[in-house]
Amino acid sequence: MDQPCDPSSAPSPPTLEAVLRQPPRGPFFLEMDTPLGRLRLDLAGPPDGILASPRMTDDQVAAAEAEWQRARALYQPGAHAASEQAMREIVSRYPLWGKGHGALYDLHRFLEQWAEAEYHLKQLIAVAPTWEHLKLLADLLGPRGRTEEAAVVQEHLWAHRQDAPAESACDVARNFLVTLHRLRRHRRMVELAVAAQEVCGEQPVLVYQQVLGLLRDDQHAAARARFAEFEPRLDPQDPLYGQFLKLKQALAAAP
Image (cartoon, rainbow, N blue to C red; front, side):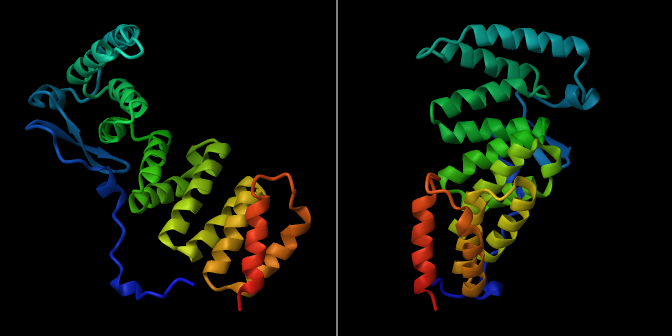
């Protein structure tokens, strides 16, 4: 079993704002007050014009959209430099318009250039701090081993799940449970698994994570009871069936 630790000695998790803020890449940047905190947006030049008019006009939006469409048309598989440069020029001219950063995020994610993908995604979040964009960040951080940061983002996403379609919220719950297991936060795992079943239904993966969390938290009687309750509904065709059998063995061997 996991060794107990003194909670007072554990470092505090970062705040969401700390996860989202980035060091500036140049001398010019804008501090954006958003519902997610104060975020930094890099600029190509002094921010005077933006500060005087912090919102894009309809004509500017139309011009940016037209340039974005032209930049997309330049893209060729294996020869993306022209399209990338055009998107960078859009970001430079229209820093408050997020679709340029969104396109650069997509490109660098496709190329598996994760640092650049993360940078452009966080710039996009600074100007468009939506639930969906935050989910993209959580999905980027988790598989890269950035579990503490992923957990902070996922906790926020789950707390604001009413802002998203139900299936997207359930996807966050499933990924968050994996993150919590990696962080050995087993009691929170159990809480989330129970809450997720109320929203998403009794999905086998959620039940599995609930029982696993109970086992790892040394709540053996509760783990056995939940497994026994669910076992009659366990489908041998389910992809997790083998894992459930291993879990049953672990429960039998537990004190």
